[in-house]
Length: 161
Image (cartoon, rainbow, N blue to C red; front, side, top):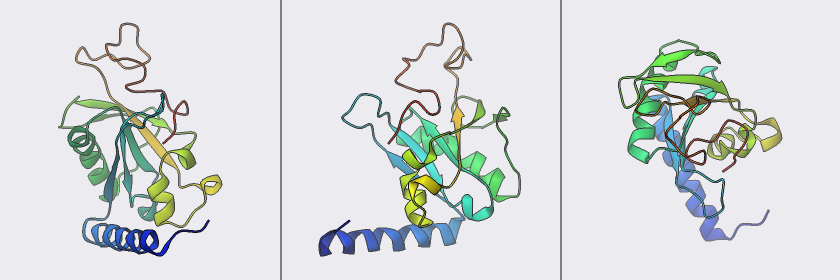
């Protein structure tokens, strides 16, 4: 793929900035606003946990502030040596209180920045877990009566960046 020199220079600066953030904090959070196409929700994900031997973490359907606030405490636990596993419920101090860890079956279509950082093609993507959060009544997207629209927090594997 050909990129013009200006785009290449910009990407090099972004890569250098990201590397500096990861060196200083052990991970970074990448936030992606909702796309123009249906099924492209806003989401955030970590970059750097794979370098610590753990899948990256993804959260869908939250604004940048809340996505970061949810990812931050879980990433801190991982960076301190804790492995989170699919099906586990994790308490987080910010926002919903508890999230459920799910496997992201299509990380190559989601964590694009992490794959760029680790120089991995989509078909050999870094692994990722999606963190499901509850509505104000404590219901999750798979529960009857969940208050959020399905596009707000699509199920893992049903959406892409």
